[in-house]
Amino acid sequence: MIKIGFVDRYLDNWHTNHYPEYIQLASELYGIEARVTHAYAEMDHPDEYGMTTKAWCEHYHCIQCNSYEELIESVDAIMVMCADDCLPHEDLARMALTSGKPVYCDKTFAPTLEAAIRMFSLAEQYQTPLFTCSAQRFCMELLTFQRQEPNTISYCATTGPGDMVNYSIHQYEMLQMLMGTGAKRCQAFCAGETVHIIYQYEDGRMCTFTQGKKLPFHLFASTKEEGVKEIAVTDYYMNFMHRLLHFYADKKVPVTKEDTLEIMAMQQAGRKAILNPNEWMEL
Image 1 (cartoon, rainbow, N blue to C red):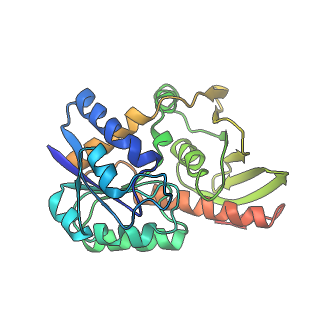
Image 2 (image 1 turned 120 degrees about the horizontal axis):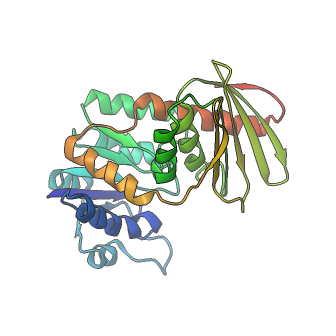
Image 3 (image 1 turned 90 degrees about the vertical axis):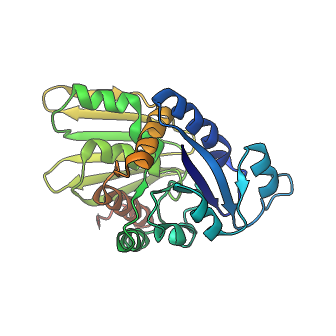
């Protein structure tokens, strides 16, 4: 059995509260035996109504590690969590990235492109397999569309809720999955709380990113042969868990460093473009 260890600033958050069950279900569905067995947190939940680290570990039948080093020594694979705040990710992941054991770093990977480059460089120095993504990247409907439409996507558009710092990663992952690499520059247009960003590619292709607090996830893609098609965004967590378990089993990273770094560059340029609307920003 693959023993997985959670590392977080504090436990009792949405991802840490749901991923143990998702991993167990995926393990049973796909025949890759794995469980979340250990956890280490830098602090207890800052809210008095949240579970302490001890209570969380008891609830999820995990061993509470007293140190980061103890967790690394005790498990076969590591998940660096802190999904709602990527600012601490570089520090939080540092020890895991020197472990040589497969590491998944939860979304959003890093607050800046520069931090992302440093994290990959550290992992490469210690030959640590490193994987990061949003679960929406492996949306079943998106993967089905790719199989049915193998031609180059000339245009792609996505809408979604949330904020640029944390939640935009879901849209960028889906855009990059369809468009591939090669984004060159972007320009933002803002209307109230809604932002619309156009990205141009080196080969003349284009994609658009639209985000507003209550906008639903939608994805559209166009090929020269088939025109525009809508892609539903509903079924992704089990597909993501499938890829995650395979990564822990064979240590083959399912998303390349180049893909992840382009996503970080697109997100960073998009944030800059919002501060400078109607101006082109180079990636």
